[in-house]
Length: 255
Image (cartoon, rainbow, N blue to C red):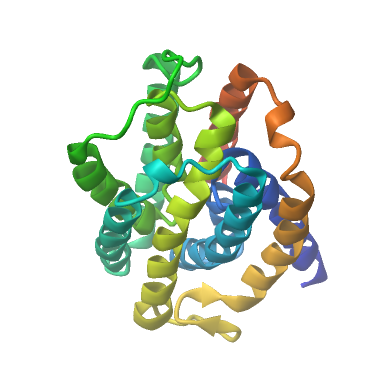
């Protein structure tokens, strides 16, 4: 048990790093590690709960640092929340093996898209462009649905979206944090009330012990790293984002 807690603390630290640098909220770190000791459903549910706290804390930190792009937050956040309701509810009726397979497929597609489609590894526009109405409504709903279904927070879709609209990586990742909050909050509520508890220390499908250990590692890290983001070269930041997705993909495939 002590070994498991120490592992969760270490991965909590890593989730704090990914929250600040990439806007993930920790989803791509917490899902694989919790899935090692429990079911995929519990991993996704616990990931969502951790992301609520991580993303909210990072949002405050990034706002104080002046990196949030308010013009991209609303009404995109509202449609993301709507999609998250649909995706999270659907996940409670999905088999564990299928959920894992879809998680792997989603990561693989995102990595290939980021590498092959222009506008992510290198900025194509000198000045950011606004989101279209269709992107805010259709794109926001789709982001929320996929993120809620897989427990990944949505940043893996919002960061590439904002990046291709011309935002620097630091600002795209920062703005992804508040956009992750509605996904994580909706998913947590649904998993807590609609999920099935498989043991002690759980509320629905949310593992409170694992979540607490992950947060003990992530929250201090978020507080410490918020000053570092602007020091990373933009292209190196984008390459590191894709690299982390590849590591998460390998972790889930090989577990």
